[in-house]
Length: 183
Image (cartoon, rainbow, N blue to C red; front, side):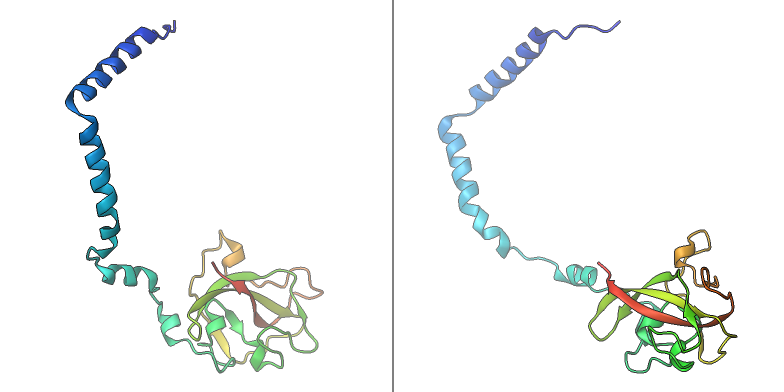
């Protein structure tokens, strides 16, 4: 059975606490402490701070791929957008970084990765889409797994042929379209 709350017990306890506080302090004492706090508050920003840790927290730790990434040649595997690509690069097979070569069609699905651009030091969400319909290009094959996840997260796995929804499941090459800034 639930007991009823007795307000008299709480009232007695709070009255004792209030009387003890009132007997040990004066109005002048409280006012002087508040004045001291207000006078000392502007000095707090002048206290020394260990800024080395703050800088380390804002500087991202770069992976091996990110350290070696470049922004000029999209036909090489270390191009910054290719951090999680697996397959032939469409830029070597008659297409572009984000466009399929003639005679192929882009898959309706894609896998994603977050890649670091060393030029502006920001991370971007990249959608990797397979181009399907003809046999494999077999040029500029890359297998980058920076941030790749296991198969139980298929939207981020680069080991799957993503030609779902196309007229042919024949893989040709992969693109890396920029989706937006990763925040």
